[in-house]
Each structure stands twice: as structure tokens, then as C-alpha cells.
Image (tube, rainbow, N blue to C red; front, side, top):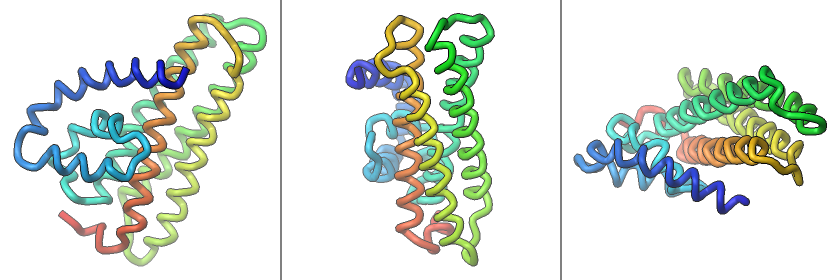
Length: 197
């Protein structure tokens, strides 16, 4: 199932990449994003989802981390909206309906963690950098766990709507994982990376 999810997501993201290819073709945009995404678990998805940030983030680990979390928030918000529609229109029955309610709660928790993370990334401080990095790692890891917990509720369940839901949440886990990797790169790079242009 994971390969099918990756394939459908990659097709969608390829179109997005084509839309951003003009920016990547100019200067070092492609090199910047390749370099930034090299630390992630899903580099192709990273390149495609963050391509539009190349011209502004360049070689700044803090800007790439912020971009990664921002894109993740957008993706998880979309998941949350779709889950709420499924619940509102009573499109799931039995065990799936219970799993859906749990999933909505998990995804909302993930969003809260991600929003806290973005807030910290917007006000990085050299005096509290290590503490901030610890918080970011904890919160983004928690968001990833929340997304996985949502998926667990639909394990071994069938149906078109369930599969679509699983695909969307799975895509969100890939993007969240990449954001965590970008934050860890920032933490490893250290204080100087805050001021890198």
C-alpha cells in the first residue's frame, strides 16, 4: 500500500514541481533544494513540496526548517478538513466511524504541535537555541506519532474512502518526517546557522 501511496503522491507533486521549475532553473535554486533535502528520509517529496522556497531559503538551515514546518501545517490542515467532512456527512460506519473521531483528535493534536513549532522557528534565539531545538524535536516527533496513531485506527480496514484517507494521512507523515529532518539539520548546524543568508 505504501508504494501505491507514494506513486500517487509523486504524480501529484511532479505537476507542482513543473510549476516551480522556472524558479529552479534560475541560478543555484536546484542545488540549494537538493542540498537541503539531502538530509530527509523522502528527498523527492522534499524537493517537490519545498521547491518554491529555493530562492529565499538558499543555504539557511533555519529558513529551510521554517519552510518545512509551514508546508507540513498546510498539508495537515487539508487532512483535518477532509476528516471533518467525512464526519459531518456521516460517510463512515461502524468501527471506521469511531476510528475517524479518534483520527480527527490526533490530527488536531498534530496541528497544535506544528503551530507551536513554527512559532518557535519564527523567533529563534541564540541564548535559548538548544532548548528551542529540544522543544522542536519533541513537538514535531509528537505530531508524527499523532499521524501514525490516526493510521493505526484504520489498519486492516477496507473501502474507497478509507484508502483515500490513509493515502492522505500517509502523505502528511512523509512531509512531517522531512520537516523533522530539516529541524534536526538546523540543530546540528548550530547557532551560526540562524544568521546564514
